[in-house]
Length: 339
Image (cartoon, rainbow, N blue to C red; front, side, top):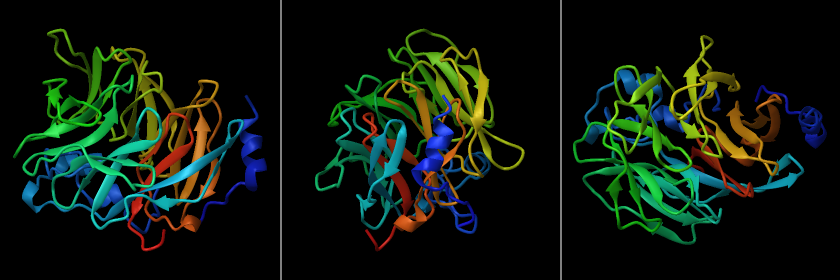
């Protein structure tokens, strides 16, 4: 651990009051090619790997990663991290968590081979429900739709190149395409779901935006982009990343019509993953992990250290998500025998 944590809550408060994985160990998403089904049919490849490697899907392997859940306790806008619990706790690949609208469960991609299905768990996974069961195809990147009334995910057809955004019931059983402009890897809907932003699996890994109901050509906004593509919490804009010259990543924002693109801030260290959520007053806030330390910032205030995740037994933390009510955080990390 090389990063010095701020001196408790007081240090965090000093920063906020004004208004990734260890380098010697690959993070989970760096050890598996994925959400780049164009090459390997396994979720979460880093963009450079996704754009340059071509591998047989049947030969792809997925890393052993689990989803860890921890409560977030808030004093105003200052969070503290409660005890971390290994929710999925099984051999294999469990990744890409996204909380349900009520925050009482989460969806995720799970598998033991080159393809994954979508599952849903309550917070401790004492209730685990399989949403898709497709041995020859793959589903990943599950997320509730903006109103929380349906489920979206990427569907990769058998032997397909990339995938399309699909919609389904929250409990599964009614899959249907939401777009036909693939192959794509990641996506984000605007608030009324008329427009879609996608990580297009082409030569340059473009961010493309388009109207779902008009016969129009998708508009390329930026290239190449990173894998962390999200809608702003109010679904009024798109957040995406691009690599910096120093090997790190920066977060950008653009409209769902591709206008008003601008830089927001740099992610800490060399991480390319983050979570975005809304504070109680509606302001956007962000979590990221750098050298095993969970960090937080808002749009106008800098990164502040929240918790040492290595002290909680987590290694190689990559993806993360925050429940809509801000009561819990989900963290993807390497499998561990410790709970």
